[in-house]
Length: 228
Image (cartoon, rainbow, N blue to C red; front, side, top):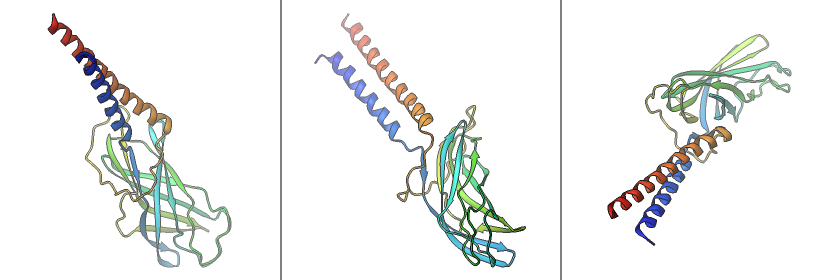
């Protein structure tokens, strides 16, 4: 194989390797975190620990967030009929961005017996990046309204982020600081939009490949010029 051909082959392999690294780079990280809720209820304080996870799906210029509880929190001394419980919660945004995202969900689909932990349905909301960088999402305050009363549950154990995303603000917002990233504990990566992510990664990979081809062409032309 001639020097020119070896150089072109090397450039192509390097470009493919660079593209593979980009494709393997994680865009999101999620884990289930235990949240110790201290609740102020109409009948006095109550507490409960529930594992919580937050997932995301790319939606336009933002992300649809889903917050899920694996155990019930608080309870009622009387039965709560179908549709009586209306939950909402805040997700705290940190890292490169800041603020909160309000997530809401449907009321209970079935009656909840007296003195039984109230299972919270999945709550959803939309996050639109204002800054570019690594952004964290941590479970925040949970509010439950039922039968004309309101229960407020606040995390008391300073939980870790349940989700970390690499985001880009619309219009290329300024890059913020690096957020705290939780250690992956085997939880599945949240879906971040198969179409949008694939297109974005494909574009990045294409850029690397084009750069590799251009490099090989430049090297080839330089060798030809040297021989003259």
